[in-house]
Amino acid sequence: MGVVKDLGEHYLARNYRRFPVVFVRGKGSRLFDEEGQEYLDFCAGIAVCALGHCPDEVVRAIKEQAERLLHVSNLYWTEPQARLAQVLVENSFAERVFFCNSGAEAVETALKLARRWAYLRHGPDKTGIVALENSFHGRTYGALSVTGQPAYWEGFKPLVPDVFHVPANDLSALRAAVNERTCAVILEPILGEGGVIPLSREFMAEARRLCDEVGALLIFDEIQTGIGRTGKLFAYELYGILPDVLCLAKGLAGGLPLGAVLAREEVMSALTPGSHASTFGGNPVSCAAALSVLERVLSPGFLDEVRLKGEALRKGLLSLVEEFPEKLKGVRGAGLLLALETRIPAGELCEALFSRRILTTAPKPDALRLTPPLTVAYREIDALLSVLRELLSG
Ligand SMILES: Cc1ncc(COP(=O)(O)O)c(C=O)c1O
Image 1 (cartoon, rainbow, N blue to C red):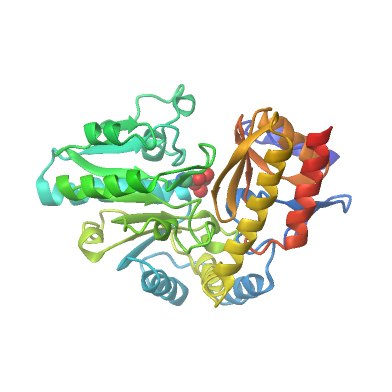
Image 2 (tube, rainbow, N blue to C red; image 1 turned 90 degrees about the vertical axis):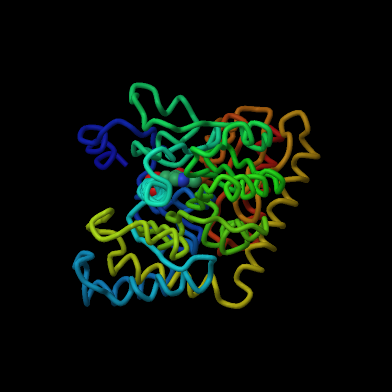
């Protein structure tokens, strides 16, 4: 670790708190450090490596595409981008796709799309955006402004104006915030960085109804919940309602940077030539990787397996909750986006797991988040549960 850590400490911006390990290789749910020590990965690059590390078919698709064409920009057509848009449209509510490079950029695009759509239809005054307290949408100015966690705003104000935050699952606060001047409501179906907090069916349905009533767009940020993470391709399928705009990133290209915004034609038509763009967005290599990820995620039985593994993990965690009620409170989430709700500091549990070479995340002091690759094996779930049991017994 010496050299790499020293170089990093010396030259990199100091905006991350990193675990003391240098990873050099990964396969499936396993990572290997410089000394060849093996780690079990229930972080998966923060819910990115949907098919685990270096899945054969994704690596092959990347290699083949990299040998043909890396980049041409969006002045021209490329096949992987067009085909990926087709797959996303054919498997969602949407009719059109805009590609970018990250989650924050997808959120930024969705917010700009909503304002411009409202501007073209209703004039310049319909600019309000309603978002949730404790939400997370990214670090660029628009995405940061809708993020409902004041700690992330400190020192960065003034933020984008006309953003109103309401508590998650508070129907009357939502009703009070949405009005004729609202152009968009933006929601994560499960607040991931907020500690894996699912929105209720009633809240989601009311958001849909209010958006229809005032002529606003309902934006779902499925950057963390999308691409099979919850056991459905998109989490909105769990709720039986459709968004107007959908943001994707993270798992989409299985580890390469790629973001996407999906919408119906009538909405996406607000983006006319010159109104929005991205030089790298939808580059052929990331799109080739995403095509191969989606082929696997959409293959027969894959999402059923995610649901079954999610249930196995949830069941195991719930039995730990029963066993250690003084330390644990419950389990939240869906599919393979789960949090163990703790009474003890979740960060300490995460550190203790790390010292046993298991990677997890603790987005909140009471939430140990588990986002393994969607391909995680049952024996790997059992391995995590037995180490957790040992640590909790200590
Ligand atoms: C729901 C959600 N939206 C947006 C983002 C930001 O994505 P990125 O870090 O790729 O900009 C994240 C990242 O954690 C996220 O979980």
